[in-house]
Image (cartoon, helix red, strand yellow):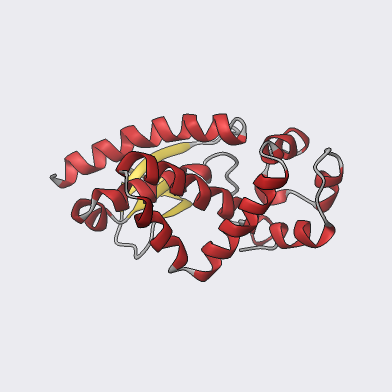
Length: 190
């Protein structure tokens, strides 16, 4: 697949996967989104930055490692499906609103179920997750929350739609039966 074909396909998948993420985790908040951009990055990222085609404007964008996605399209699926979860309630880079373990766990979980489904390779995402200790911990924490209440994130986002600014009080305002220690672990900044 050529670079332009790969990038176009990933842009199409971004739209599809975002709709699926909204069904699973609740609707996204409003944000200015510039799209999926290729970048010389070791791992994909969701960021707020100057728009490449108009440096005077800033917007949220997904930056992917296009060369990895071209070599193995499974990696492109894993990258884009993970990053779309960060589109649900993006925050401008601000230390007080940095991504927490809950959001990273959601993104890792979502990328695993999408990659497993789309590639029929149950080991690809599992191997990628286990190779990154923090992502694996976030994934396991999310799985524990999902086991307690599969709609926990939707319930939390009804109280506070911003994943990065969720608090222990937000958890208490739902009917989710969860221990304080687990809430603290989920809300730690990643």
